[in-house]
Image (cartoon, rainbow over all chains, first blue to last red; front, side, top):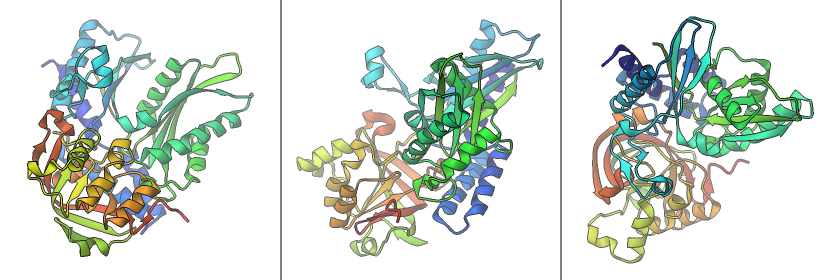
Length: 281
Length: 170
């Protein structure tokens, strides 16, 4: 096993089994807000689960997710086909060791759509999504592994907003989309991931970057406004009612088009997401 | 915390109300989208008995079972929620999953003295409380086959009982 393969393997396991310190602190703050409630009981269970998962290096959730990769490349670093292959090998090894849920669908195009080809029993057969590569000023080659579950994918939405030259209009529409998404997800409290760009691809890439870089302790006014307004919906943990439907919002606003339209990608990340970990290769 | 051991008695279930937190110990069945419609079909065709699997007093946990562990999927998926009534009629006492279910389903549960309970998706905790797992039908469905697991102290909250739902916010 190469050094890169080992690092990627370990990072994937960390992403699938560990809450970051800012994530734990966000839960503790939310628990303190509503002691003795059903919501409090649920959030304590989620936090206890995270501590057990971290201790035992076991998955946080049985839907271990689809690996998504975000690679930052510094000015003097090189990415070769060989390095990408090693990253993919590391992902495969990490999935087997976590262990990831064996949910790769086998067969040709049609069989993969209707699931008639059956499931591959090898956890490592699950292919990661295409790598997002971003140049950075820092002289590093840094990989973030994110594990994206199925529930948020069902409730996520990427669609245009006619902004009417008003940030408030965009926020209003994000909140209007987020409340039913959070309510229907089931696995709240959520973290809302938002990307705003010029195309569906760009908006979704920015949303992934927001998931890779967002911090529960650092919230912009834009993010905080969305969080506070969605929390007024009283969806609560697991939709059972309560003050904390959303722990935070992670938003990344990219370059914009000279037009009346903004493309917004929104993902109601479940109570364990963003499941992520990073490593310098 | 109300402690329950499977198989559940009619009396134990009749005492449960929405909002109760319960601890479940004993054998629990696991099935979801792929397998529950097959079970219902065999029950309705009266051929289920050939399998020798007694569902009376039982729990159906809406989960896949894999090396990654167990965790609830949404119980309001069409294939899952449509199984509640048929399974309750043959004696299943608890449907364990997550998400809001329809008023018609809540009513059908009450008519059969059965309940719906929500279990947080805490796979790592549940893994430490799962003692045995065995595939009991349709192994070709892999993680979506019908499993029986032995559990110790699974914690859940009663979300529908006696015709009421925890999602009926006042």
